[in-house]
Length: 153
Image 1 (cartoon, rainbow, N blue to C red):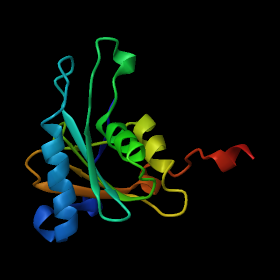
Image 2: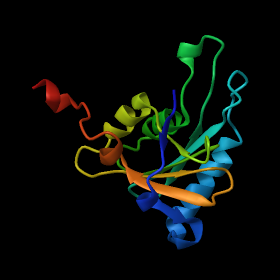
Image 3: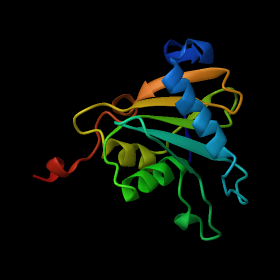
């Protein structure tokens, strides 16, 4: 199930975002076009910004065995890690809003994003395909009590 975020303090206009983050948000909108979502028809795109400025995209890929589906956020992270990236600064997620409320990463994606934010918070931009409203949040705001390897020690 998708989570929804609608805190008016975190909503900004696309025009107020800096150029680099606009590029990231646009990349998430473009990535959404590659979604393979024949079962839910709920297309999601994600664009992950690496510490060196590289942008890696991903989209949701559904499977007839639903548990094997992968969300856009995890798709982008897996792609980035397989290309040798480990440090990320931000991620943009584009999905159709539900009742005018931006769709936020699911719990599994929050934990996945959190895995790469042990020293620095990762900024999250949530938008719809029209990019009218941008919700700006962070992984620590969405998952304040994340699980990390050092939690086991």
